[in-house]
Length: 140
Ligand SMILES: Cc1cc2nc3c(=O)[nH]c(=O)nc-3n(C[C@H](O)[C@H](O)[C@H](O)COP(=O)(O)O)c2cc1C
Image (cartoon, rainbow, N blue to C red):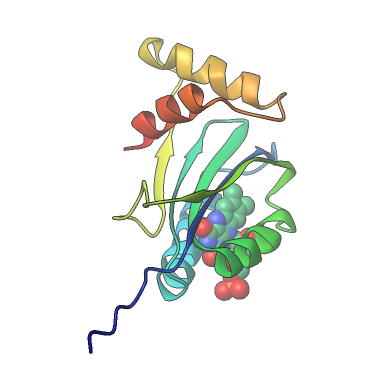
């Protein structure tokens, strides 16, 4: 008899939040170190895009693990106004290689469209699939 191990159902969660204005980018190194330590253990992968004002994070993994991490993140004093943009089932991970990929969106000419999108999402409660695809491309 062949016993098949079904892949657990995967979920992806995307949120946007506002950084604390006084924080330096050292905070990012601390978050990255925490994430590398914890996410691997929980089979969580993801990516964090940030600029001076916002964090936008993708988290993917099993429902319980992703939800528990998101709840922890929501209570983290290094940011505020955390707003969930996406919480959906996915067939496969977008960031399978990374415990947490991190990218700073620099204020350069070529990033202006992405910065506008980030600023717009900072005021929005939803995001379209096209916008998500665009953000994913920027992170990969
Ligand atoms: C923007 C942001 C993103 C974060 N992302 C993660 C993450 O992916 N994984 C993680 O373990 N902690 C992340 N954290 C940190 C958590 O909020 C929390 O401080 C940490 O998980 C606690 O770890 P501990 O239980 O090992 O002390 C993030 C915090 C912020 C502000």
